[in-house]
Image (cartoon, rainbow, N blue to C red; front, side, top):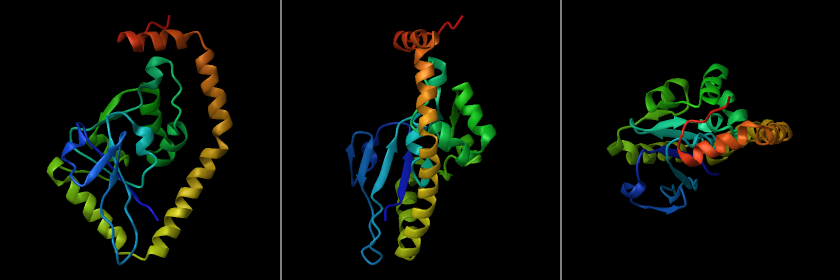
Length: 195
């Protein structure tokens, strides 16, 4: 059984001793030999990558973290599960706000709408992660795994049922006259002109 603890940190992960970076993922962390439940996916999240956040179970952010889904600004369909998972996790109105405006929100907003479990001071982040891992590991491995399997399977089943439509909508956006302008504006670091 694996429980994901995602740490959203605005900055570099160099202070996270005991973990080694694999791309944007840090591998390592606490294990409970008695419970035999490795907490094996402690992730480092650079700003804006909500799609990664949505695939985790327990989340913390430092106060300076920022989150957003800017794809619509650049005429890009937000693949990666955001259109399917975000409304399930934070509710329709908050999901639509983030998906349709492309705006960045701060950690306090993310905590208020349930995008993260907690906002934690940077110097308390690793202790928070270890405490969360220990709380999970202290429980019945069979029960923890069963609960996580049921919830994960339900989310995965729903996401799979939406894959065809997601691909169709993404293809439609890429074929639109707005797509070349959005991509060009992104590359040129300018505001797009969708007239």
